[in-house]
Length: 394
Image (cartoon, rainbow, N blue to C red):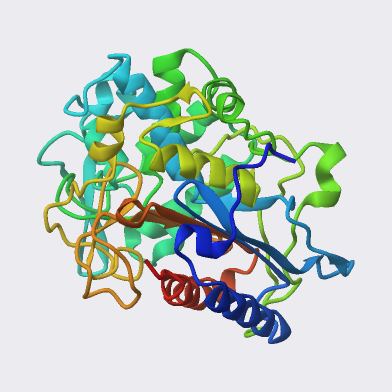
């Protein structure tokens, strides 16, 4: 298991043991109700872990107990890690956020935007280039095929099967051939942008994305169980979902994390553990450093976790009211408005299978939840925010 972070009794860091006990009870009820096979939650404050529980089973087909070192597919929780990787290269002077994406990936030159008119797709020139900041912020005009059924998104759906067996450069070149869903810089649209950012990390560093992450982030932070696949020796630790969605009966199909992928998806390809992601979160909360390893400066992290949208419209199921978006994270702008508690400046993200994390600098606090239950992610994330913030006593 990853080297532990310091731990403390809840009261030592201003948390209520009674309320954290209620968290355990609520997680148990969710498991009993088949909202998830197993759930791991880690909560830390003032640099110390005050709560770390693994409940339920690792694999419902086997029925073995979920342990704290279980490995989860974290999907889009890969995005903050890859954004940090890119900003490490930013600090080395490898690029400017204002530069056009096509400077580094020429296939993105002269992008076209898809406009629907009378049920047909018309392509018009983009009003401006996609820049690097757009790629971090999901304002590039790229999209995801699974996010809807517009004519542009249907083109993404058609292109997705062709990504199998392609490397990162080839996959990103496929995205470059597709029309944009929106004009660059006009809308927050969740997208393959961070996959493109992963390719940029390769171009700027001269290394494959997985190699860069391993050498520059995972090894310095001692994140020994994080990567683009789970080695055979650790397959018995990989958490699995229910075979069928408990609500709809539809098959649950997650990424095959047991095989090394050709396409190292910066937007959604990593697997990790609660403790590994806690070390990453603690590094962020510390202002870019952990156990003597400095990845970024404090000012760079402040810049990444500030709002970069300035009121741009977005899709409200993901960019919920009360939040903006920075360079790889959603950022809380108001104490109220959102439907869960939090502090101004809190930043976070989650993954398709239900994993989530958030960091609250104002409270010197972070939490990580790991599940493999796509159907339950919205409810369980909100419940966790509600209950965990209720544990803060001073």
